[in-house]
Length: 183
Image (cartoon, rainbow, N blue to C red; front, side, top):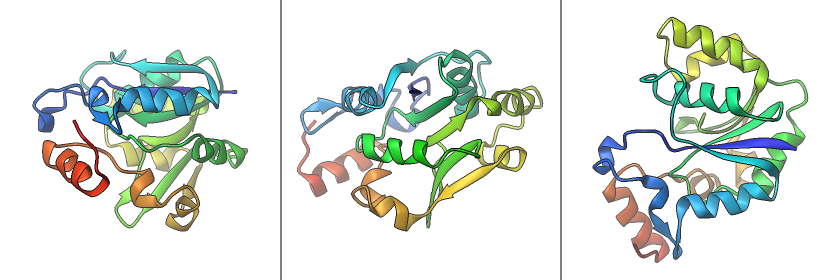
């Protein structure tokens, strides 16, 4: 089994401070959709709202997730990603053998908040937090990383859909228009 952490501790400044996990997609809050998908591959699904080292952004959330996890592998997910699937998470686990991080990379770059982390990342993350080196992708130079390509992602419903996130009201409105979703 793996642990799964939904990061929900951000300030959501681009969304007026609203809880993005509570946004409704297909008639259900995003976080409910995520819990359902993750509970089929994990017996340790947590919502991380408070960081152990405050004020460090997403890297602080990853640190909290790794610290509190019960298992060696931890799938870390941003609370604003409604389309993550259990088969995708299972795939990451199936190829994680010799990697510290298994992370999607598309033409838009890395997606470190829909990635699998091994607890061996905890010490490198803590060092970066202590040095206030908070850029997520800088961590990759400290550990063994397996990139998931766009072609691999397309097996799970398409990279754009799978990695969709809702950062602004305009993105939510665009999602509703394109997908027929309602608030």
